[in-house]
Amino acid sequence: MNVELVGRVLSTLPEDDEHPYRTGPWRPQTTEWNADDLEVVEGEIPADLDGVYLRNTENPVHPAKKYYHPFDGDGMVHVVGFRDGKAFYRNRFVRTDGFLAEMESGGALWAGISEPPQIAERDGWGARTRMKDASSTDVVVHRGVALTSFYQCGDLYRLDPYALTDLGKESWNGRFPSDWGVSAHPKADERTGELLFFNYSKQAPYMKYGVVDENNDLVHYIDVPLPGPRLPHDMAFTENYAIMNDFPLFWDPEMLAKGVHAPKFHRDIPSRFAVIPRRGTTEQIRWFEAEPTYALHFVNAYEDGDEIVLDGFYQGDPEPDDIETGDRWRRAFRFLALDRLQARLHRWRLDLNTGLVKEQQLTDTITEFGMLNGRYAGQGYRYAYAATQAPGWFVFDGLVRHDLKDGTEERYTFGDGVYGSETAMAPKVGSAGEDDGYLVTITTDMNADASYCLVFDAARVADGPVCKLKLPERVSSGTHSTWAPGADLRRWRTSDDAAAAIGL
Ligand SMILES: [Fe+2]
Image (cartoon, rainbow, N blue to C red; front, side):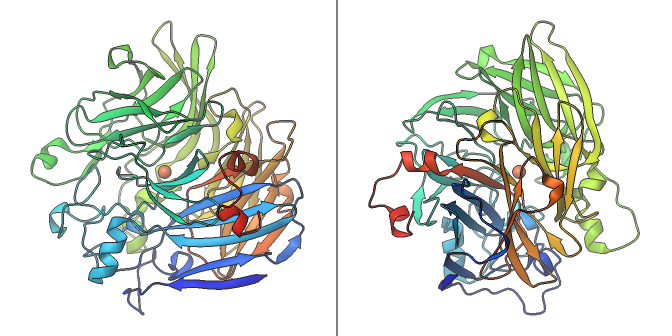
């Protein structure tokens, strides 16, 4: 392994930090690395694995003004790239406007999600306003460029997906909606080259939906009027439709009128889904009502005759009670605990003829952060690959391959003290079927005080990894990730660009 320490940032976090989401598996890094020819610890790198696994991370550099929440951390992207039986690694901070300003000031300038916006020293970003756009939530690839995002809506920051070179902010040829920003989970449709997105705000109409085409032009942008400010996190799409949501978990309107942002689950208000023709108008939006819940993430959606099938993670208890015993941190962060939220894979069938919704719990197993073979996004599919969580904590202790056709599951547990990431599905070069590929994840191994990239055969998850690669140092636990096939990336590249510089 050839390792180069590229840089180090000055952290002002305390040496004796007690915050569970800044210590242990969540201990942030201050270092940026380049590593080539990664050391293979177990197995071998599959020769038909070609592309990059990108993972974003909440990696704080400064203490919060008052209360740190793990969603507030500064963005850091990790990439593990594969080709011809070799692998490399890079990691870089996302140099957002907020990150750079706080590096200059030497401390927090904005309010986190657990803090009142009023304590921010400057105007900022986000639907909640006066937050730092840390761009630490998700990473997607569109037109061969990695885009990092912020769940509260902000800019999209562009990175070279191999070298993680900072390419500045996305402008969409001058039409980026900077007033509202873009939410966490824009959807790249590999089949059309489009990027679908939504954003939200405390101002009417509260939500908008847009389409960016393969030329990077914002070709469609419409209002999706809601009854009031909402907290949508994800969307879905089919071949012909985009699907937005209006879940009954939102800021209490009376408290909001006093400037207090208190999310409340309204158990008597139905969930609603908006079905919009992908280039449709506001007038063409059709709303469908379903059981009250909150879903943080969807896996996929597709059309089946006159129905739209929508799969996501239904929360049985979106507002878990505070149990007045036990660890105070665990109590404080119970909204991050999938076992408390009772998050399970769920199917909604939206009937375009009747306007009615049929619902079905697909499994008893508690999972979230589901991924699929990207070529099947918006299409009929069979397999979802999701994360299991250590009870009570926002760390992933294993992964599950859900077979949605026969209802079976295959599970792999990382082992005590080892935590994974959202696991992306990488189709093999020349793959023949939906699960003909690999699952890729990065672990934080507290026993070995190290991090590894694990590669699984997607069809044989329970067998354990077929390859284990060592990274230069232990990295913080993290969540959202993506896979970008090498052939797709090379379509967008010239011979003298950064990829050539690192031998790909
Ligand atoms: Fe998310």
